[in-house]
Length: 257
Image (cartoon, rainbow, N blue to C red):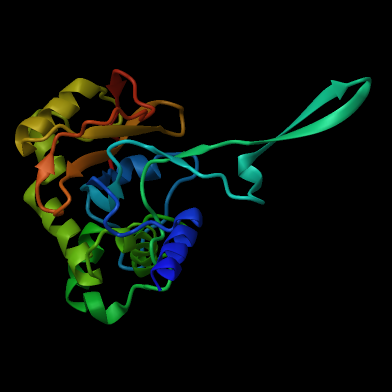
């Protein structure tokens, strides 16, 4: 029996199935809707109407403190590098397995789909604070379902607890108000120091965040997402330790919405 259990565990590990407790901290990721929409791809409003001009939740993501090597999966074209070399005058294919890095757990239980009745008392708050801006669907529930399936199933929380935790974390600090208090307000003309944005959030929340930028339709850099690091309990903000390549420059915009 013990051998059978060990064998099953080994198979799950080889298949890349992550345990719900295999992470070190959470990222609470909030996106500025003006930056989501002010791109060449644009955006679409959910069926509940245009969201408020405030940061909206993208997700609560379990993350590793250090990326781990991910075993190459046989038959996965992304992991196979084909190199043509000359061997004795003839072209020969050499196949190499490339090991990739895995920096967070995901899809820990595909069978655990989000059930509407589990979060029915949170729907009004979720509509206001976690709206979809994707043009794939105007239904925010599909956005929440995807975030639950990819990230929530690895959180060690139940469905209601996962979404309630994200809402509670967001409620503690209004990021748009925090930035406004530091003189950083939405504008189609002004640019702001990236350091001043980070410092303002750190001073107000007590924890240093990570920042991600994108490009507007004209190619200018704008603040897109704020990553706040949260301890494994999903309650306490902590300093973000991992460096992030967030496509940012020293000066960024915060476009109106």
